Length: 343
Image 1: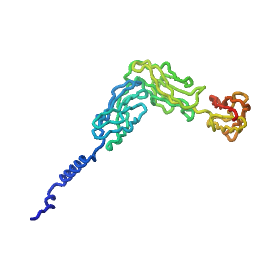
Image 2: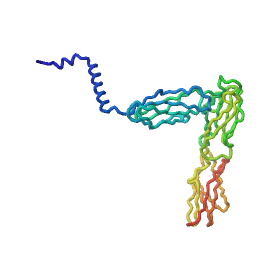
Image 3: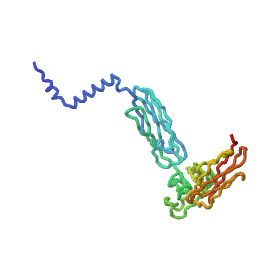
Image 4: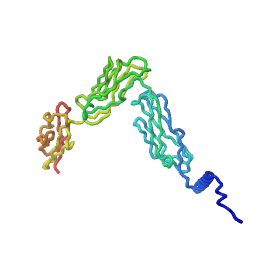
């Protein structure tokens, strides 16, 4: 008796063979536990928070399930925008559900928005996924080029900031900017109503009659360093009667120093203070004074903008003083001088 096995299988469609083989392999892997692990499932990867009046915050929740047989771990949840904060359940047991809770802050937003959130998990098939939060931020006025401002005395053209304020078309009433103020006194503020079509400033959008231009500047008696402050004003409108937006300010001192403090120990040499006057400032206006007057200061030029400053302070008792460094009309930059007792 002869069996022709080859001819028997030859008449079967190859697709059926592949399907049967895959099913057998899958069943064997499932029984042997090779497919064990977490299995992430979201009820929705996008949520819509609806209409929000600018300045308000709105919460939303993404619900997720672990359909696997091992714990699902959420390694990281990272919003792409600083306006969105997220909290989440870091571990979800098999068969259980968890949440990713988000809060959207809208003070710098306007109009329809979509903010993404990256999620890293231990599910091999969903190691990195992206969620989307949508909303429609309603507002009374549009701030251009954006609902924030930046100023700096380091780069040309950034000593002032301009914001074009336009009334939103569906808002009733007349835009009237009043009580414009900054959270610190040395940021100067001015609001001007436009009476004709013209650019709001260098590189700014064009404004029309009835729009307003807010001009911010860096005034006198500044505090050196980087800081975030706020600008507020009243609009005379119903939906947003008051507007507040952030302004980032960077004010560098007139000089660069080798160190930001001097320590003097009687009987020990004092390292000279190396000083460079910033570009765009006149080095001939450099002036250094000491307090108390018993501190002796000697300034030696070592280059067109470079100086070596020697400081001597006789005495044995510990005491604190200061050096005041000024250039042109800028606010003096003060560094501490500390005299310590000899060991």
